[in-house]
Structures are given as structure tokens and as C-alpha cells.
Length: 227
Image (cartoon, rainbow, N blue to C red; front, side, top):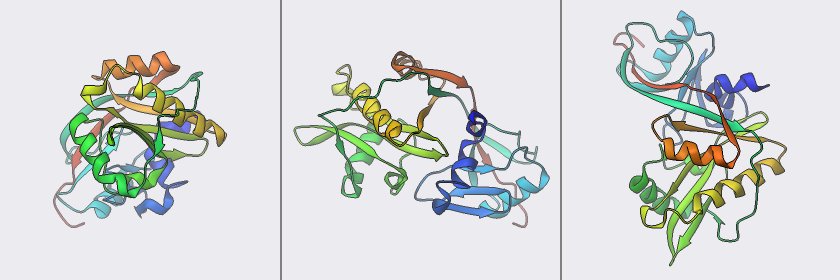
């Protein structure tokens, strides 16, 4: 079952998140206002890359995570080394300070993401799952939520705290609260982080996550020509 984590975007968009998907044959992506991720069926052959080219269009930039190397004519725009962490005994716990965030909170969530840069957060990302936040004086100062949804697994993402409030355990409280909810659905949590974000990785490991794999997140430019 753990092998479904090897191609999580494909697994999510051909499963629990299919209603957010745009698909062409062996290629799939989230709708543009939901998440920036694309995926191809693995092992990815010539047809899979042709399908992704048709789906995205020549000149577009797509983001893929791990998997087979792209054909040489696909330009690598950026590569980010990452880690995938899985539940290895994380203790879930409720948080009295946390509240569930809603669509009306998206402007405040976007502003917090812009200040802290935890990863992509788009206008409809909140629809992917439960997002929790903590406020101080009415202002949103910390948040975390659910992003990729796979059979039996849910990804915790967008974990961020305003710099003025770091060191107070807010991220820990939010992650534990999300873990409790995920476990309540008989699922297990997993996470992704940039390999360079060593402080976050240490925090997640201290909570009971372990590194499972080290995927590379690659932004590729679709080669020119007929889509």
C-alpha cells in the first residue's frame, strides 16, 4: 500500500481528488486555481509525455514530483530537492487554540503564506481538505492543512507561522490536531518538505514522522510544437 506514495499526485488525481483533475490519457493535473502539480502514469513512456504536452500546451511550465526523467527536449526550469515523510507514530491531539478556516479566510491565509513561504497556496487550495488556523488579536498567525488525498493517506501541508510568533509551539499544535482528524478517518498522515528546510524536517521528525523518500520537484517547460 505504501507504494502509492511513490506517485502521490497521480494517485490523488485518479482517486479521491479526481473531481479536481484535468486529464489527457496518461497525464493529469490539478485545476489551475487549486494546485500547481501535474503527474504522469509511471513508468512514464513516450505516450505519457505526449499526453502531458497535449494537456498543458507548448511553452507551459509544469511541476512534477519525482518519477521518470523527462525527455531531453523538455527544458528544466527549476529543481528542488525534497523529502517525503510518513507517519511513524505521530501523536494526534486536539488544540483549543485552533479553528477551522473557511473560504472567507483565504485572503488572510494567502497573506500569511506570502510572509512565510511554506509552498504554493492558491485561491481554491482550501477546498482540498481541512485547514486549521490560530489567531492572535484577530489576526491569523499560524496555519496548516490537508492537501493531497490518497486512499488511506492524507498529506499535511502549508504549515506556517508568522515570524513574530515562532517558538510558541503553534505549528506543533496544528499538526497534531490535523493528525487526530486524519486518524479519525482511519487514514495516516504524510508530508513533503524542501530538503533545505532542515528546521521543519527536524520538527516533523521530533513529532514522529520519518523520512521515507527524497523526491525531486521539477518545473519543466513543455517543448514547442503542436499540442
